[in-house]
Image (cartoon, rainbow, N blue to C red; front, side, top):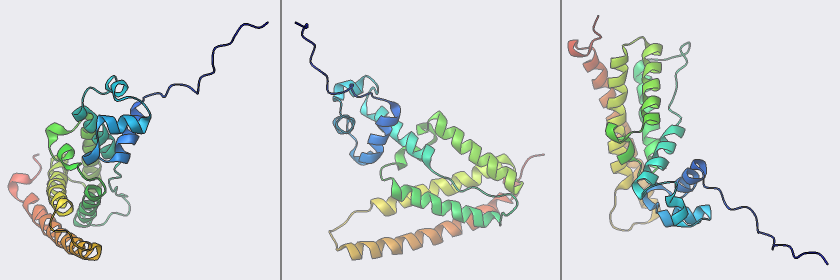
Length: 207
């Protein structure tokens, strides 16, 4: 008679990885992230998740970092580049759409102290790219891009997080489109002014 065999398991225990955590967090969305929610999405206990992420804020920072890393910031082909003003307008639109696509992200990207090292590296590479393509100093590229990004993120967050009395979807979309148009016009004005200011003595590259 054969010895009794242990009961078959129902598969391997689910592995908790950084990739699975951030995917679950992105799926839930930053405003709705909780330890219990992410753990449930992973099919594990929230106590198991605590072994990989220390607290809720660390979890949100992890997700925010991944969202930012995945952002496809517009690039410029050096052989087909237009004016710097045109690129900054494209960049401003990308910023607005980025904020719209990821509610709750603004606090994690608008302040430099909140940015992680991978986020700062991505920003620095982008600044170097624009400086090289347009033949301007790195500091000028940094200031221009930071100015457009800061104001674009702040205003877009206001546009897309606005609340009020319940309205029909058509009315909400119409109002949102009107606000987006105002935002785009305002960003174009900011860009024109920033380029003028950059040409003033205090912003010229030092020899």
